Amino acid sequence: MARLALLSTSDKTGLIDLARSLVEEFEFDLISSGGTAQALKDAGLPVTKVSDYTGFPEILGGRVKTLQPRIHGGILARRDVPQDLADLEAHQIRPIDLVVVNLYPFEQTIVKPGVTLAEAIEQIDIGGPAMLRASAKNHAHLTVLCDPTQYNTYLQELRQNNGAASLEFRRACALQTFQHTAAYDQAIATYLGQVSSVQGESTELPKQFSLSGQQLQPLRYGENPHQPAAWYQSGATATGWAAATKLQGKELSYNNLVDLEAARRIIAEFSDPQSPAAATIIKHNNPCGTALGNSLVEAYQKAFNADSTSAFGGIVALNRLIDAATATELTKTFLECVVAPGCDAEAQEILGAKSKVRVLTLPDLRSGAKDNVKAIAGGFLVQASDDAVEDPAQWQVVTERKPTDEQLEELLFAWKVCKHVKSNAIVVTRDRTTLGVGAGQMNRVGSVKIALEQAGEKVQGATLASDGFFPFDDSVRTAAAAGIVAIAQPGGSMRDQDSIQAANELGLIMVLTGVRHFLH
Image: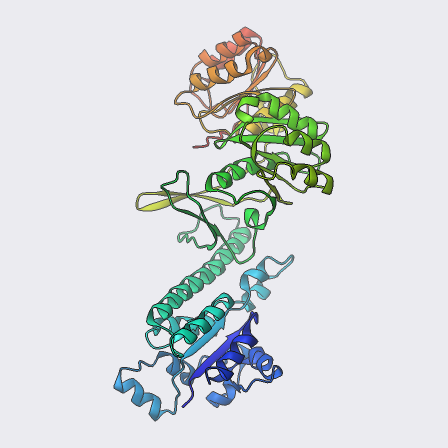
């Protein structure tokens, strides 16, 4: 008797070629349901509809069609268990040797603008996961394929093994299937959790938190050559860096991607339509230069000149389409990566002269992950992303001297950049340009000294932002002595008054933002 294959797919990619090979080359009989059966019939292939095979019609508008003993009995029967074979014979059930199923497009549906909860619910597959899980469980006796990319590999497997798939291949397919159904269920749970959170205005993280992703590509290595690494995409629809277009350059590395994300987070602060042109240069996950300008080339030049030494080999993010003038400046030094919302043809030709630099376009620089995940021994930590909107109207001016509108804008710029510097973080700015950055020091005094020393003589009349409060007034006095005129800090120390008193004594402006931005 011919072997039996069950085909039921939402994504018809490669389906007809696979089915034709099964029938003509390997003499399979085909059973199928709904639209898949019609597609096979239209292609001139012999196929039996599931409803004809089971003797039971599809019901509930197609919600129930494969949830039937003749289907699941044929999938789950163990060929080495006499009682299973006796049950098949008694109920006239044929064993199924191949199951080809992919699921309703749930994730593709929920990303559509204006999709309703009811529409999303209808794209939750029931019969598909049941068949996939049953087939994967019984992989010792049949093959399950859940992705069109497996079809050619499966046919090659049959050709190389006298028409049979090896146990090793079947086990690998079963593993991929369980990973696929787990990711599918996670996508549903995540979506429903988000819907419930919005409706109930809950700020709590879920009791159950799962991670899954599809490998986009292996990476040469991780942070160091002895660390294996790979890049994964979350969700069926490419978003974020998975949706970026690489115009030129080598493959992205692990460190490139980490730094690109740090650059994206900073430039996102200046990516609303009202923002002026902005540029940031990242080195080892911290900004070495960030600036605003009247044009993109001006913003980049200011960011580069803020610390031209550190900018060498840096990662650049821009909030405007790259034009020829900016492209010309970008080619004047060695850079690892450049990302912007777009790049015009002339700029792309200019950048082509530096073919090794990786140039990417990412139209949506503002959208990032809603949750941050960090692995620890025995588990992981999850926190909501630090996406608090900065509102100077909520700040408290605590000194006798008050900021002008221009000084308030400078304080806001410094504060936005400081948010993305590793703690303890100090940022010194003037003219919407970073002059000094003190990052990742074990004490705030050390960060202040580094930022002020880096700013040098330019510090006169500059602004300083601190991601955390000042526990003592020593940093305030050091800043004033160097030439700082205005300070933004969150406040919240038991000794806030000491810092405020020192600021008044020295004629400084100080604002308390009320929000802390530690970045570990």
